Length: 121
Image (tube, rainbow, N blue to C red):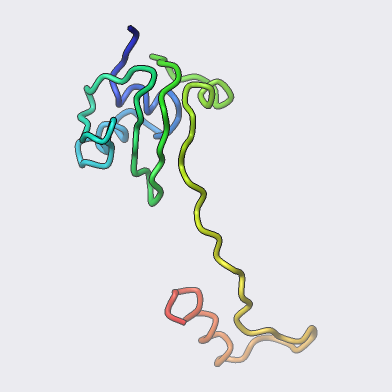
């Protein structure tokens, strides 16, 4: 049965930008294979489920094909099945509707916009 190192596979299928990034994610406990914490040297083979926290998003993928070298994005997506749930949709609510041609925002309007952008509302 064919297998490869986890850090190499994560890099090859373009889930991480670099192989050291993949190894660092494994060492810090952000990657699990079949619900077990994984080291960078953990062997992955077809049928394994990989959960990886990449950035602020948890990716859940099933290994379909093992590759050793980095390939193009179109080929990389054929190596795994993405089982990641879609992110929740947040409704877009305008902060302060302004009439067209009302001029520049006032200082108060800018403060409201700054608070909204910072997430303080």
